[in-house]
Amino acid sequence: MMKLMLRRRQLLHLVASGVALASVPSIASAQAYPTRPITMVVPFAPGGPSDVIGRIFAERMRETLGQPIIVENAPGAGGSIGTGRVARAPGDGYTLVLGFWGTHVANGALYPLRYDLLDDFEPIALLVSNPSLILAKKAMPADDLKGLIAWLKANPDKASAGNGGVGTPPHVVAAFFQKVTDTRFQLVPYRGAGPALQDLVAGQTDLQFDYPVTSLPQVRAGTIKALAVTAKSRLRAAPDIPTVDEAGLPEFYFSTWYALWSSKGTPKDVISKLNAAAREAMGIQALRARLADLGVETPPVDQQTPEALDSLQKAEIEKWWPVIKAAGIQGQ
Image (cartoon, rainbow, N blue to C red; front, top):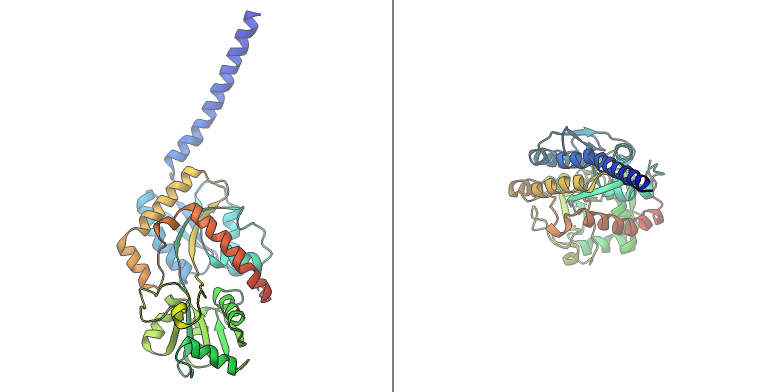
């Protein structure tokens, strides 16, 4: 009997030792991360806002993590092709996606995705936010937002608003503007925000909801009018443009924010290292100033955690999916 008990104890000891030894490589891996280059997938073509922001952060986070962060552009289907690639990647922290409001909120209402926006990713950090500017052509009779709304109501279906494509943030916010203000105007999709802005400058369209990074140079040149910014506070890069609250459309807030996610199952220790690298980058004044010049701003410290990004994404999905579906907007 004693020999049997002894053998059982020896067996249990061996099993326990085996389990402990088996866990050593994964612990060591998490502690050593990263040991090789990291890929940051930008699901859009080079040169756009996502690409610019992704490369700025990749450059700075590389210094903290001690490994290169290789930016790979994978455009198509509103960003869902590149985003889907990351959803299918191993959960090891070596494949990230620089996503934004469109890829991780709107696309769920626009496309029949083969991945789940919430369940197939691990949030890392919110990086920057980018409110929209409510713009009008130079010849628009209205010089402020209240005047624009009054003019649109007096001229239903006569105005047009360009946007960078079906389902893009400028398209969605324009549809939301119509609903909130009870106005009607044509929504004209273009193949990109640049061509849409060119037609606004030329007076071919009447208004536009656009990113500051692309439209501020034209505003400063006096070729178009900026009537309001869709945020609670004025832009540091353009402090003379009033907020929607100040301009007479209270709480008409909209922000195109950008963030980092990893594949599902990425260890928490790895997420913490990536989050720390992103937060360190956001704390550098020179980087913040560089982003501010582009019309985007980093979030407050309490909004830089993975948990804060998760909460933001869920709240935005709850708010905007009904708006997109009610407007009948579908991805192309």
